[in-house]
Length: 424
Image (cartoon, rainbow, N blue to C red; front, side, top):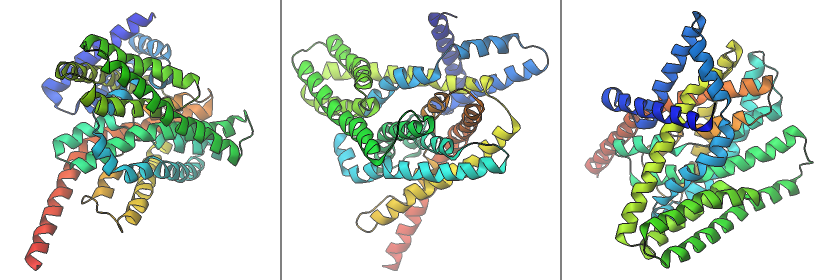
């Protein structure tokens, strides 16, 4: 199937599903699209069981021709991260920098090992023979959180600005950290090179440190170019080149492209917006990138929903996936709760922050893409299915119940405040 035909089908499905969600379901867009796509996939699988397999086979053929890993990690992610970083206030981010830095690094690494060892026990319990190193790979790929679905829910739920900033900042940076952790563990699993402490330090220094420096340089060059012109079409084209050409060059240089694009996006979204753009350009820039963000998110969540058609629905894989859900949530609780508990000694946090960060740590396309990047075989089939089960639960169940949790914690805080005032 030609690339244009695939794009046309996906955009058409996204448009129809968006209309249905807007008219009838009234869910947050990402959650609604994934729900409809998932239901459509289950219907196709059901029809295949009754002998009507032609449509299911056509969908399988289309999805098989799409390299989900390359499409997301080496294509769509550059746009999504830049669009997300563009609207983050740098001053708000700076106030939460310590929390975000710890959540995006130590919490991700801690969750990776907690989930990895837990997954090794779970897979053995259900009769799957998956080596520990691959269970650690699963821990690395399922640890990063996805800001796309959760931020819309938080805004409608009336979450505090500081909480929004923590979740958005963590999600933007932990993608890059998790990918680096995944690559390091993958080097050990594949046995492609001897991995020592020095090698790990070198990879992190090059990928993360180099990514930050490259992102600053990329943002500075774009800022200089933007300041020299006053034409919104040229300026939007410059930001588009940053997100695409800058991301590609970072990958070529073996730097963390996600981190580089986030840093560059933050620079342009704050200093560039204020000092190098006219009001007209700012309005056009925001409209353009919001539209790009919405379209790509719609296509991405439709794709995630359709992926169930090509999964290996083995009973052991599904059972392991269901058991992995409480494991992933528990690891998230410990990896977030412990550092925040320590930091409470010298700074204040919003009421219920640990509960909201735990339940609001949704998993999404990054996890699926990393799972699909593993070498073909039974281990890959098992880990892809387990990952998919966790992602579906995360987006549908956690995503739909997050708003009531935020409101409940806010109400609880008001009651406690009133009680404190009465006691005083």
